Length: 475
Image 1 (spheres, rainbow, N blue to C red):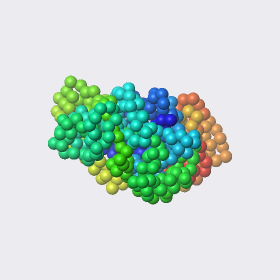
Image 2 (spheres, rainbow, N blue to C red; image 1 turned 60 degrees about the vertical axis):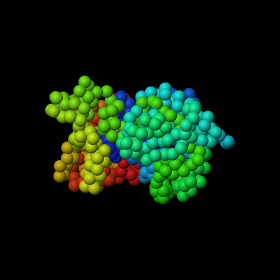
Image 3 (spheres, helix red, strand yellow; image 1 turned 120 degrees about the vertical axis):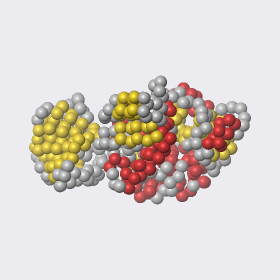
Image 4 (cartoon, one colour; image 1 turned 135 degrees about the vertical axis):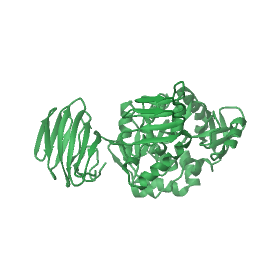
């Protein structure tokens, strides 16, 4: 049994302002109509031997990830929720425990570990590389996939493979990100591959090596999985137990220390899309080398990545720059400096700025809300409620609300009343009143919500009942 394990826990801070803490890179449609997470799931859904995937994601992204997978018809085997990030080695460990818990006696599932935020343009080549690695994984090897380098890249780690014929080679060593001269030597020599962060191995075999090489991590993951709680379609890892786990990558915790590591070369149009310059490299450009998305006007500009989501972006005489526009932020940087975007995000976080974590549009399991305007004692939002969706039964201590239906039909609970609101109809929700809205129709419900009061934080929500298991929570 081959079980894909999709690691969807990253935040992608180098792709700010498009990628945010609550709307990370893997949930963005960066290179096509589908998001990177959706492409990853579909990439393995087409493999004959592959079972439903195990998805490991940040607790804050659970409904967003689940909805994106539902949109493309992928039903995960399990969605494991991390209360805190602990890097890839613990994430794969709990996925291995989940796979073994549901496996038939005596069966060891093979885990195909894939980051959710990578681009692969040649799916057939990827699937062929996986097929070539299966026999080695079944024999107990820990397989990593090394990307055949196309340039002397200094932003990736490298894998030096042993000489010999055949698709599977012994790993001689893992090499940290080199300087440019060493990278050129690696590419010229032909023995080195980019470290992709994709793996294939038996679930029990990986846990055995983890127990031998990182016993404290292995024990902590066992305790966390044993105490996990199933909520709806999710398995929530307990915060205390999982936070006690040491944080480390698969490479450092296991692959660089095991004697069972082998590598399969992969030439499949791979990119980790780890920066704006990487995205510029994988997208088609115009005759001047500009890659544009959205409402963009470029005059006498070349070699630029220009992306607009909400407004017109116009440039004159700009060369080799990145301009990213969103509803609440604009980022401008030379292409050679885009790795430093993460320093901007760090400054935003230290200043307590919300732009580091969320867009104005925030997704919820029932739909989304968008902040339109706010002032000292008011806030205006636009709510979009999906067909059949229901918000929690709740109340607020510090604000009242006025709802205006602009599209669709709303079923409103207000205290002991239950009534319908059609388009252009409105109602008031006084402070402290128990209320709920749901969409009984088959088209999205759009509501303009005007809040009035002294405080508008999401933590002024007292959930009494919730269809999505969020009682006592603010997400």
